[in-house]
Length: 335
Ligand code: KG4
Ligand code: ZN
Image (tube, rainbow, N blue to C red; front, side):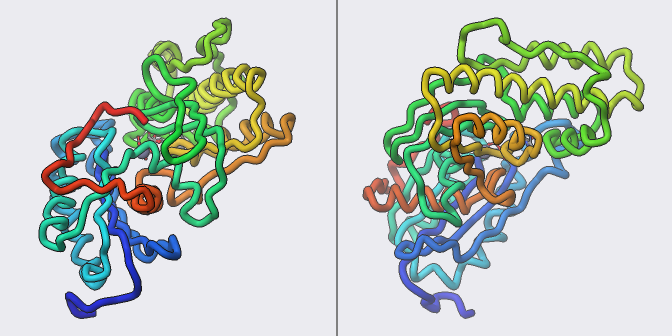
């Protein structure tokens, strides 16, 4: 299709670059339909360092984002706004997306919709399904472990959070200890399938504490000490025991929380919501409450621009536009 040619109705172009995924999507406003979505992941490039190297990530975004954008040119004349993740995330990588959003805003003379990445994860549930609110949400990603009461786009209350590391991050750290590269979640989950969790015993964090909060630094150390004397044949057993304990911690705290507020509708979102052991355990817990579990399709669990575009439809309805000169990045912002 030639550049500048008009296609379809009115659309939003969304950009995600908060960590190590460069992604752009086009969402049709009237139908909420995702028309285009592409993501270039940097996992391979960061794998040898055992985690994301911010400066490298930002350089890779500067190459990948413009490459994806060229494929979106046919929609340029139909765009009504540019949505971009501006918080939270790595400062240097958020900046890559925001700079692109500013350039598009100036050249196409359309406003920007700044989008909170965590809200984006929540709206990943509604890319292919009708929105269902209110909802209790467990957000488990590389940067966050939070329990959130979601009433509406504007009303989201974090009711529990982590005191240190996040659930996904603990998988990354254990994978690093075992020399398995980055990201750790998928590789540990796979390794655990061939392991026997009863061969290692790790303490469930905060199990005696009345607090409804999460903590993974103690478990991480627990696993680290075990790996010192372990041989590679033990690694599947360590992976299985770690995954079981890390997940049991979430389940124990959810059980506690549900005593005060029984769930009606419950969702798991974020990169680590892809974990099937976690999904299975939560499903079992919800049976007792006859509550429904919502999860996003696997391709939208980890970071992507489709969820940012879906979230931006809500911001668009509220006319939450900002001019290119007024947008700022907020790396440490919460919900
Ligand atoms: O949401 P996401 O793509 O990025 C952040 O916003 O942080 O989440 C990435 C995190 C990584 O820590 C990764 O190891 C974890 O999600 N993850 C998993 C699984 N797949 C990804 N953790 C456990 N099990 C998985 N299957
Ligand atoms: Zn994320």
